Length: 565
Image (cartoon, one colour):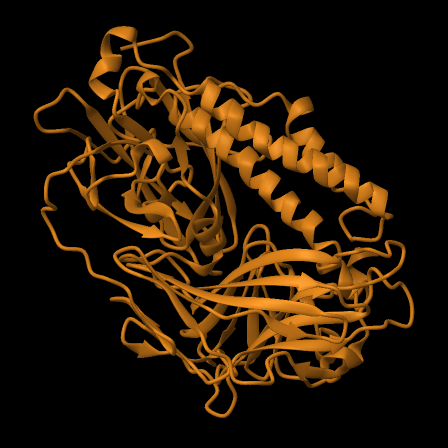
C-alpha cells in the first residue's frame, strides 16, 4: 500500500491560530529567559569541570511544565499566567544563584593574589565580543581595566550612571579581570552618533525625520532597503472572527496605520568607546493612551543595529508590528527554527503562499536575493510571529486580545531586536544569523560575590572550535551517561560543512565521539593532530568532524571518573 500512496514533500502548514506566536508576550519572554538561564548553568558546570547533570525535577521539568496547552499559546486565563510567570522568573533567577554557588573556589592561600579581581565567563561555545555592566565595586577611576590572563586592555564607558566594558572572550572561557590605572597599550575606536545617524568601524545607520531607519551599511556594502519607504512601526485593527487569544484574521495585513505620524527628534544619549545610543521621547500610539519610546543602540565592533521599544500598552483589539521594506525579492525567505531553518515563498502566487501571511519563526527571519547570497535579517530576543512578502520583512510585537484574559498584555513592555546582514556561516568576525539571537541576548556570567574566593578553572576552555563553517554549537551540557560533557551542533545553511576543534588532552580525556540524542555511541573520533603549547606541558589534540546538510550532531567528550593531574 505504501508504494501506491501519494508523497508530499514540504511543510505541513496549519493556516490558523497565528496569534499564538505573540499573545501573552511576558510569558513567552519568561519562557525564553528561563531556557537561557538553564543552558547557562549547564555550560558553567562544564567550564568549571563539574560534569554532574542538573536535577531534572527542579530544573528542566519545571520549565517543560510551563509549555503545556493552553499556557504557551496564550489562551489560558489570567491566574494561570500570574502563577507561571512568577515561577519562571524565580526558576531563572535561581539558576544564576546556583551557578555562582557551584563555581570552583580558590584555595585560601591564593585568594589574596586576586582580591581585587572579578571573573567573566562566556557560556557560548564561540569567541565573541561582549558588553558587560561592571560590578559596582570594580568601576575604574581611570578609563580602563586589565585582563590578567591575556594582558588585554579593555575600554569602559559610563552610560546613564552605570559603567560598561567591552571584552572579547573565547568560547566557554572564564577570564579574570582587575582594575588598573596604567594607560592603555592600544587605541580603541569610538562609535559615533548624531540625531540622524549611528556608526562604528563596521556599521553605519541613518534615520529619517520620523526617527525611522532609512539606510544601513555593513562592512562598506549597503543593505538594499527600499528607496521609497523607510522601516516603520505599524498599528493594526485586530478583532478576529473567532478565538480571540489565538487567532489573527488575514485582513489585519492591510488594515494598518503608521505609528509615528509626526516628525520625531532622536536624542543622543551616549557616544563613546563602547556604545552610541539614540532615543526618542514618548510617542503617543493608538486611541487609549498608549505610548512608545524608540531606542537605537550601536556597540563598537558590532555588525548589528540594536533596536528597543519600551511600550506602555493600553489598547484593545489592536496589534503592533514592525516592518522593513527591502529590495531583497528572491523566491523564498528564510525563517529560524529550533534546529535550523524553514524556507517559505515570499512571492504571493497561490492560496498556499498567501495562506502563509504570518508564520512562526524561532527568533529570526531573513529576506534574501535570488541567489540567496545576500539579504537582511531581523533577530529578536523573544518574538516568534513573522511575515515576509515581496521584500518586506516584518514581525508582530504585541497584541491586545480580551478573551479569555481581559488583561492580556496590557502594561509596560521592553521589546528588543536587531537588524543586520544575513550570514550563512562563521567567518572572520562573522557569525551565522542562526546564532545571532544567542550572541546578542545571552549575557556573559559575571562573578560578583566574594570574588577573591573564585578561581578560573583552567587557562584554556574544555574545547575550542577552530572551524565551525555553518554548524552552530547550540547547547553545552554535562553528559547524562559518562563523566564528561556533550555539545550539540546544528547545521544551519542547508549545506555540507565540517567542524575542527581542539581539546586539552591530559590523561583525563579517554574518548571523543559522536552520539545520538539519547547518548548512544555512534562514531569514535581520532585526533588528526597533536601538539604541545610552547613553554608548558599542556598538550592539545585537534579533531575534524564532517556534518551533512541540516543534520543535528551531538559531540561527547568522556573523561576519567577519578581526579587526574
